[in-house]
Each structure stands twice: as structure tokens, then as C-alpha cells.
Picture 1 (cartoon, helix red, strand yellow):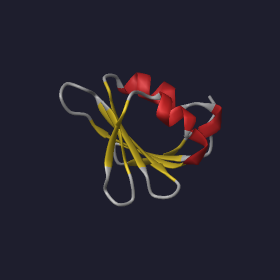
Picture 2 (tube, helix red, strand yellow):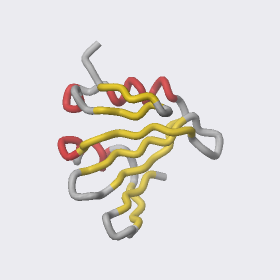
Picture 3 (spheres, rainbow, N blue to C red):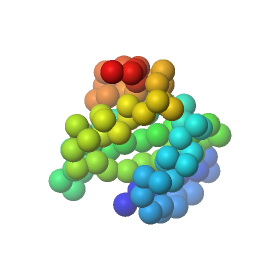
Length: 89
């Protein structure tokens, strides 16, 4: 289940990645950490204004491909502790 966490710590469950895609132009940074409950990765997207979007990915390869959208080229991602920039290619 995906969720958002606002600047005050209020948690709201959201349905899917559609929320993140609709707010994609507001993303400032991505953090990818080990997943839980059998998932490969946890994606945290930091949104301008202090909101965070958090969801699980069963495959880190699928997540890697998902992050490489033109709207996010140039953004930074902390990929399991390594600082990277999302680039075309």
C-alpha cells in the first residue's frame, strides 16, 4: 500500500503510483532503501512543501526503470546509500 506523510506527520493511504505521477513535477528527491514484507525496495519521494510519498516495489529493476521518466531527469536519487542523478539512457 502506498501512502503519503505530510509535514505534520499525518499519514494518508493512497491507491497506487497514480498519486506520485500526478504530483511528479513537485518531486525534489528520491530515496530508495531495502524493502520489507518480501519486497526488494522502498521508494520515498520527497515532494516540495514537505510531503513524502512512500511505497514498496517487488523488483528494484522495475523501480529503476520507473524512475527514468523524462520529467525526473536531473533529479537526485539516493539508491541504497549511493547518490545518483536520474539521466536519459
